[in-house]
Image 1: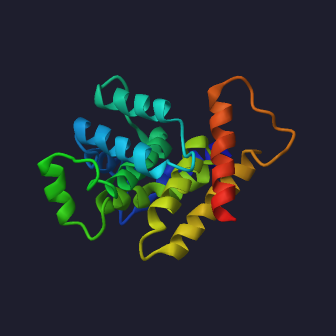
Image 2: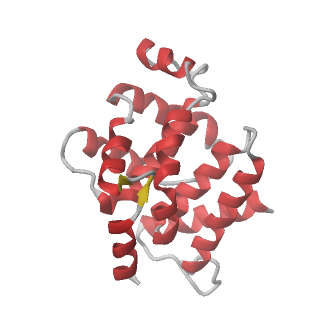
Length: 201
């Protein structure tokens, strides 16, 4: 299965743009470090009030390492890149409550919806994200569903929510005999599954 997905990644193009270029363009679309922190603050304060989407400390740490140059994003990090973009997009929906830099605010005014620029780049790579069946792809699809819910795309939101549930099932998170281990990652996945399940009901 891994070799098939690798082959797909090597051959996959969107509008004749190689996947490596899409990754570079997605990273280039990231906000500056200060705005990224504020967008994640927005997400934590306003979007996670009732549900659990991801381990905030882990996600912030991974994004921090990317900004600090401690890690390099590549084609193997598609799931994480998409997750970060969708997290920024969802955080953008609450910028009126928690300010961002004037440059970011000015750019946002030209977008049809808050976070549309982040969503554009995430949607370009999400077909590959869906096929990976990873923890990041589960969280990405769930966040995408939440992000689209208040927009004119409720049907798309429902599709992403169901994809998230299918990924969770493929990971075995629906099984009663799957008892989380001591690692926090196990508990994170369990909570994300139940969030997707409750929202879908």
